[in-house]
Length: 187
Picture 1 (cartoon, rainbow, N blue to C red):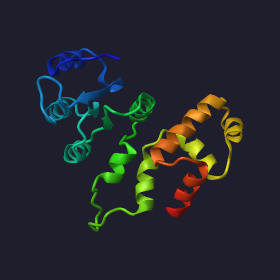
Picture 2: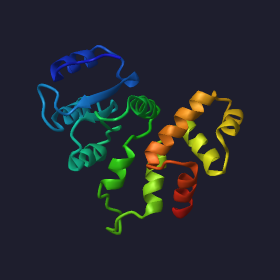
Picture 3: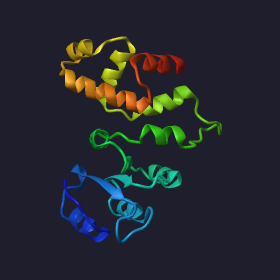
């Protein structure tokens, strides 16, 4: 991991590295740029570079514009560090990351100009999850308890508990029953 404190410093570092292995977490208020200026510059300069927006501002128009221009995702600075790590791995693997609360509150327009239904919103959230967490979610939705998840996925109890906690936080539920009910209501 490398850190650049200005746009010029970031450009210098990117000019000397193998950009195919990098994910740039671009702060929208980095010195030397404002808004999507830096993102648009990087996109023009290095079209295949993976770039995610990392910001304390959740301007939905900026987020949508970056996603339209092939951003790897959006990470709010207020996000829990464990989720940041998961988001980075997801984006490095070619996925696109958006926090669930942004997905649910952003007025995406479908082809028919209607707002997405609950099922579509849940599918968007699921689409942002790392593969291992999806496996835990699927087992939980099928009624597996933590010990069963441990056995089936060959994970430690602590790892499973972490995944379960992050799943609950992502879907804003407090129990397996709430989670299963939410999943069933979205079908």
